[in-house]
Image 1 (cartoon, helix red, strand yellow):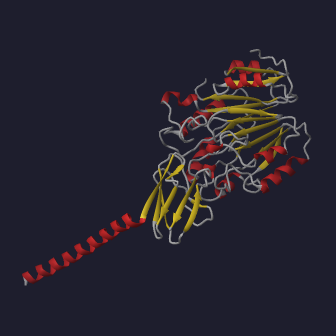
Image 2 (cartoon, each protein chain N blue to C red; image 1 turned 180 degrees about the vertical axis):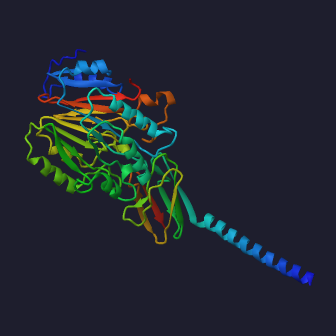
Length: 320
Length: 115
């Protein structure tokens, strides 16, 4: 299968075959990047990263997710140790990230001690700032009050916000509160109205990055892997030429492209979860101790002005 | 004098034993007659539907590695987050059908029917 796209019916520059080839590589620690209409994939490693990005990116940032500080069961008795490995990986990047996005489930049980321990660990990350959105594990018992007090001082409603960096518009959303019986993740009307107004004034050429805990596309509703009103949120973003959606929650990488919107879920820094439908439940997956670090990881994202898709690089804790 | 003291002590001890016996017995009876357990396993309530007599106490026990909650759809009852091995109990005093769910994983739902 050639990497060069011959029949490109979509202005995205990505056809289904090329994407599927890239998909086949994803999850084994692969860089999928789009450059000049050619979709490429290559095994991860410092050398290949440089080959893929001959131009210095205008912006580099990192996504980490699902640290679950406080978890101590068989799937990973020491989640602090694996978070430290993830931090070491971030600190070893050739270009320090401008900032880090943490896409939720910072803690296991929302206790003050767990939040404090996470904060303590993240102090060693070499970056300017860390942005957070809550996971369902961070809002137990208090409807997200503690999370908001600690991380959401400049946010709206139950913790959503946006900011601009290097010409990219970033939007952090909350979809883990006020969940309804039988339903999936939820954004709610107040947040949807805010989002509509937030992007209204932006030019369609502005690159958009949306980040939230639960996937904003329906992956596996039987396990709650989706958001009930994500379609409405995405309808406000359809006119933009480049939209990248970054989620956590499912502790494994998955990608999907829909028009100009590219969806990515991230690995956890704590423990893996099973592929959809391959286990009785989505609970923590116990794997042999020597393979755990190959299922946890961090994500490096690079933006080059003028290129309309962000380069997303997932690498596991096992890789050098 | 000595005999009287001994007699008094014996009566006293028998009295205590009787009280303890009754307490243990009544607790046992309550457990048998008016307590039912629902297990939380693999992100589901087992049994998912439970029919009980009025006055029965239902005890939910979480066996997962993940915290869950037990929340009445109309807020009739609401547990804190239950970590592994934690329990929550609620006594149903009025007949009716009670739908409930886990507010952390809302696809987890269950029903209690009180007759």
